[in-house]
Image: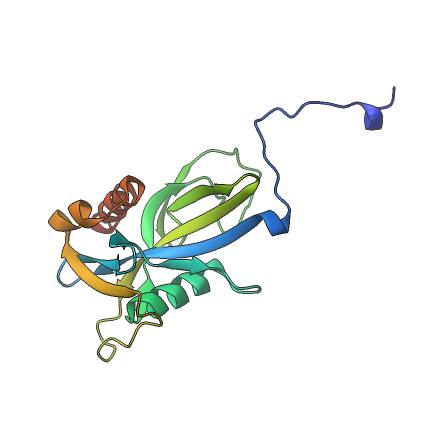
Length: 182
């Protein structure tokens, strides 16, 4: 039997999705650094408190999506923050083959969390999360695209109690730790 005809089992638990079975979204935890507050969207239709995110357009980078979606949904101009954090991504310039392990980097602008939501049988949503800061030099906030959401800022102490979903609370707590460690 030749190598090409051997039906080997994968070494890792794996899933595979065709392009019509997944959607990629990007969001950011938005901070107002001057007052140590986090922006939360009040979903008026569902009476839930969530974070700004949305689908990535074809040809758009994840960073571009994060800024666009946060600005559209909150009305606030923002910028992505660089963080000091661990990631399994290799450095921007690889000078040698490196083991696939987490390494600590300073001042990087990368997603700090990836959420995977199972929408239906064989359909998933990937949500890449960044950390962003309100551009406090910009003019007053614009008008969000949707009348469904109201952007509200909460102190670090209050935001974790306000968010509706446990996973969002855990993510915001991690984002606050990373911002504090900058």
